[in-house]
Image (tube, rainbow, N blue to C red; front, side, top):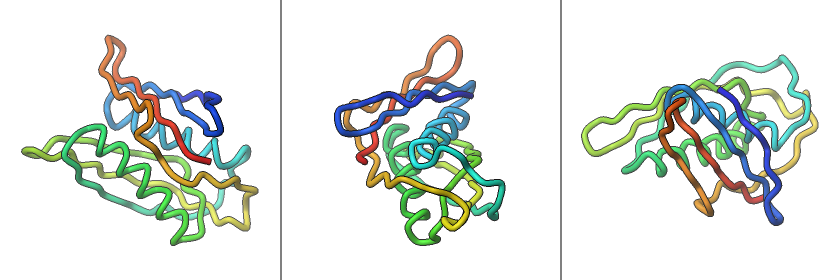
Length: 136
C-alpha cells in the first residue's frame, strides 16, 4: 500500500495503490494526512467510522469526506488509516479506523474538501489504483 502526492492546479492530488480495495482507500487517506501535515506525532486515540454508498467511487468520496468531517468535529488530524471495503447488495460499505492526533501535537495545513474532479478508482494486475484531488 502506497501513495504519492501530486501537484494539481491550486489543489493537491493523491495517487495511491493497494493490494485490496481497503488498502487503496487507506492509502488515499494516508495521502490526505500527508497533504495536511509533514510530520505526524505518535499521539492520539483510534476512532472508527463507517460509510455506505451506491458505488465504489462514491464510497471512496464519502470515506474521505467523513475523515475531513471527523477532523473538524474532533479537532484531530486523522492518521494511520485502516479500511475494509465490501459490497452488500447494491451498496458499498467502508468500515474504517484512524488515529486522531490532537491538533496541539502537529502543525497542520487545511484541506477543505475531497472532489470528484478527475477521480479514478481502478483494478489493476497488481491490485487497486486510485487518484483523488483535494481542494486546499
